[in-house]
Length: 174
Image (cartoon, rainbow, N blue to C red; front, top):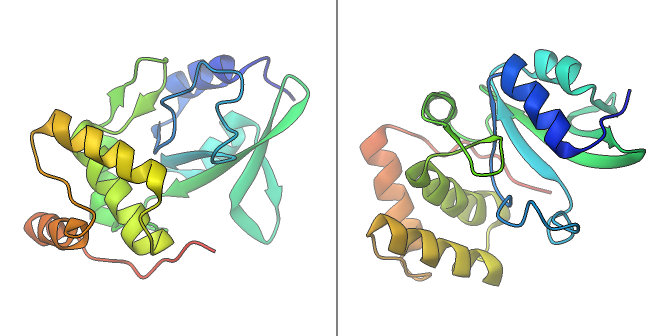
């Protein structure tokens, strides 16, 4: 079954699931908002329930990478969940607990979690700081009143994680 729009999908998920959009939603209202990163990254507490409510479908060998039908077009979503080792489980739980309703009608990370989860994504998942993320991280750091430097971001992230009791999970993006 298809959704008429992402707005319709998110409105439904808001009422049925404990989830949030992890990143790359800033250009959501633009027609080509998925062009730079290709998918929507979600975090939830119950992957099976989110699959059911989102009417998602996936490759049977890869439950994380899924798709939804939006107005007759297949759109990629990655569904992360507590305990999947994408982030520390304690951090994933905290992310969902501290989530905020974003300006576009779906749940997002609070700004501190957003900043450090993007740092983590670049440092540990991607193993590089890409230019678009450097710009984004610098802007978020300014909003949070903290300093950002590509040269010290790993040390800053590691200090934050130690203070919070979070561990690096060893997960690597392909």
